[in-house]
Length: 277
Ligand code: PSU
Ligand code: MN
Image (tube, rainbow, N blue to C red; front, side, top):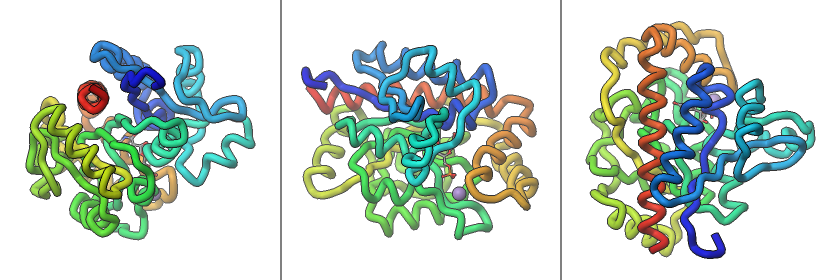
């Protein structure tokens, strides 16, 4: 960072809770590799041994995969005090990245407002309102209420920038029917928009990158997964829905999830590179 080398942070809740083994480690290592290939440095974030780690060795990444608590922003303090293994969500990863001076991060999808349960809103949204990190994602999963999620982001004044798209992607699909607040078409354009947003007081920025291909029947699978999640609550909801999507799709959702998170990491690295050059 001292030499202006672009650094891209990566979350680990996708490793600890979001994806089943061995796809979780495949995704995490694939993201790190893609970032390096683009000439940037990956910084995978987690809580281990009583401290916040920004940049993990492969052995530490394996410990997160072997079993870890889900850690969102509010859990950081207690998780550090417990000295256990903690896998950070988008919100907690943004906060850790920002503390270390890192301004770019990648994930699969951001959390949001849950379908039929508008009171269940991910802490990712409030963190985006507060913390100056650009979050590269394939939008948010259609297990969420995308329209309400975008309404909240608008209220929180968080820019939602479409990367080569006018539509907010729905993770398993490039289309959601919901518009983004701005569009950029290449790394230089994205870097300019991000810099100007920060220069004028924005904090978190969502950069929405369409997935490299589509999951067939995603809408029906999501409706079924949501119906099956009745009775699940709190932090367990998102991991439960993701596992159900994987089951119902016979693993097809997992394969696309791995591909798209790597694609997001690569895009984040390209934009970070343009930003620092
Ligand atoms: N969406 C995904 N995969 C994931 C997550 C979301 O497609 O792994 C994880 C991210 O770490 C995100 C978190 O920050 O779930 C949101 O959880 P919650 O809704 O409990 O805030
Ligand atoms: Mn929740």
